[in-house]
Amino acid sequence: MEKYNFDFLVLGSGLAGLSTALNAAKYGSVALVTKSELDVSSSYYAQGGIAAVVSEDDAIESHFQDTLIAGGGLCNKAAVKILVSDGSKRVKELIAMGMEFDKVDGKIALGLEGAHSRNRVLHADGDATGRKVVEFFEAKVKANNKIKIFENTFVFKLLVNSSVCKGFIGYNYLTKSVIQFTSAFTMLATGGTSAIYNRTTNPKSSTGDGIYLAYKAGAEIANMEFIQFHPSSLVTNTYDTYLISEAVRGEGAYLVNSANERFMLNKHEKAELAPRDFVAYEIYKQWKMPNNKVYLSLSHLDANSVRNRFHNINLELKKHNLDIATDLIPVAPAAHYMIGGVKSGLNGETSIKGLYVAGEVASTGVHGANRLASNSLLECLVFSKRAVEHAKEFVGSFVELEEEQNSFTISNLLQDKFTKQKFKISKLIFENVGIIRNKLDMQNFIKQLFIIENEFTIEKNEFYSFQLKSIISIANLMAEAALKREESRGAHKRSDFVNLETEYELEIIQQKEKKIKFGRTN
Image 1 (cartoon, helix red, strand yellow):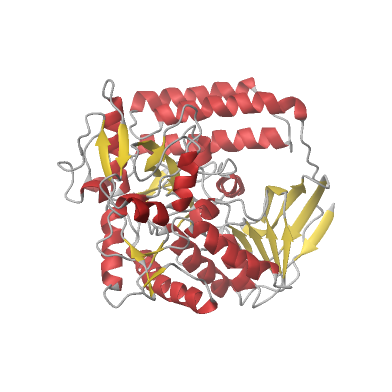
Image 2: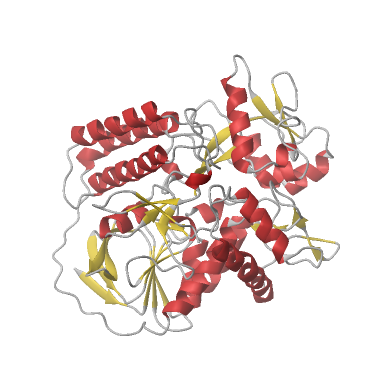
C-alpha cells in the first residue's frame, strides 16, 4: 500500500475542492484527490452564475433577506450573514485575481434569477460560468507546486479513531493500487447526490459518496429530505436531460403549457421568477394533467440577443433540432441540488475533529429548505476559505496511524447487476421521494431498498458493492428524513401533510446507530 502524509487533504475537484486546495497551499502541502478527472464536477456544469453583492445599487442586507425568504424559515441566519458578506469579498478578490466575468459597456453584467430582488448574478461566457470559474481555479492549482493532484482515485474509507479524522484510503483505477493519505486536515468537497435520480442535471459521479463516507465514520448528517429539483431541464426521448439555466427565465423567458398559457402568472407575484421549489411544483402539476406539456418560450425576445447570451445552451438544443430563440423548449423538473448533507459549523467543521466539508456535500444551514439561485458557487468560495483559516493552526504535524490492512477490488462480474439495480433505484426514488411525497410511498420505497440490497452479492472492499451500499444508504437517509418531516416546506412537498407547520422550524439530524432527531438551525 502506498502511503502519503500531507498538511492538507482535499477530496473533490469542484469549485469547493479547488478553492480549498489553493487556499491551503499558502500554509503547507496539499493533496487534491478526485475519483475522476479534475474537470468533472457539478461546479463545471453550473450555467447560471455566482450571486454576490458587487454593485453600489445592491446591498448585503437585500441578499441576506432574499436568501432567508427562499429558505422557507430554516436558514441558519449566522451562516447566511457570513455567506453574503464574506461572499461579496470573495467574488471581488476573484475579480482582482484576474477572473473575467461578462461585461456590458465596461461594467460587469449582473443577471436576475428567481427569488432575487436585485440583479446580482455574475456570469462568464454567457451561460458557462461554472466551467469558466473551474478552469480559472484549475490553472492556478496545476501551477502551484505545493499541490499534488491524484486523479482516478476512489476513496472508500475515512480513517477515523476516537472521533478524530486522520485521513482516508483510496484506490487508483489506473495503477490498481491502494493508497493511504494521512493528515490532520481532511476536506470533503465531493458534491451532492442528485445522480441517484433518473432525471438529473448532475454528472453521473454525483451519487453522494462523500456523505456516505462521513455517515459511515459517524458524522452528523442533516436536512437530507431537502433536495432541490431544478424547474427547467430539457425533456428528451430518453432519461438523458440538460439543464436550461434559470438565467433564461431571468432574461424574460415565459413558461407556457400546451394551450400556450402562461400558467405562472396567477400562481405567484414573481411569476416565472418565483423560488425554484414553487416553480418546480407548478410545472410538475402541469405535466400531471392529461395531454399537457410545459415549454420555455423566448420567441417574444430579440432572437440575436437570446442566441448570444445563451450560446452554449443553444448549441446543446441544436442537437435536438431546437432553436432557443424561436422554438418551444420542452422542460420538466429534474433532481439538481442536495440542500442537506454533512452537518457543519460556521467554519465547515463537522462533528468529527479534523474533518471539514464545503460545497454541496455540506449542510451549512445557508440554504434552509430551498436554495436561492446561484448561491451554491458562492458557498463553495466562502466556506472553503473559512475551513482552511480555521484549521491552519493545527495542521502540519505528522499523523501516526496503526497499520491499516486494506485491499480493494473491482469485480467486473458485478457491473451489469449494479447498473440494473442503480437504474431501478433511480426510478423508484424519483417516483416515491421526488417532488411530491407521501407516507405510504416512502415506506414502500424503503422496503424496496431492503429487497434490492439483499438481492445483490455484497463483497467487502469491492467497488460496485460500495457504490450500491452508498446509494442505498443515501436513499434511506433521504426517505427517513422525509417521513419524519410531516409538513410541506420549501423543496419538501407532501400530499398527506400539505401545510407549513411552525413546530417543524427545525432541522433533522441523522447519525449512524443513533435515533433520528430534531435540532435548532441557529
